Length: 127
Image (cartoon, rainbow, N blue to C red):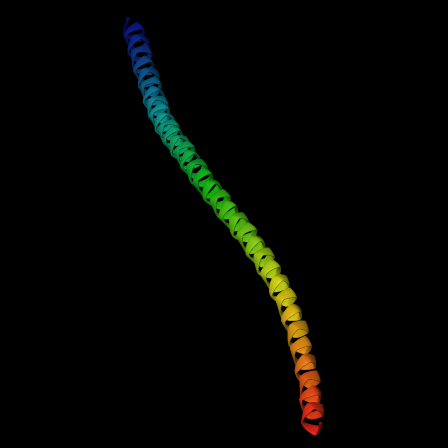
């Protein structure tokens, strides 16, 4: 009977030791689970931050693209205006050149008439 009690006590002790070991394993598993959940939460937060950053960058890219398009349009307008001004200036220069030629011809004609007139006046004085 003493032996049976010893066996019973040993079984009880082994059972408590096994239960304690299982409780330790359970506690370790729960701690690992909590650590994994924390890492998951961190990863989710990092993912959300990355998505928000990508969204912000896309918005900035759209603004930059629109600003660049506006700059290109303004530059195109300036080029067209400059071409028009150049064409207008060229047209005015051509008109002024024609007027200058006409005035030169008129001056030459007047000088020719004046020199012919001087010859007539000198001939009339001689008579």
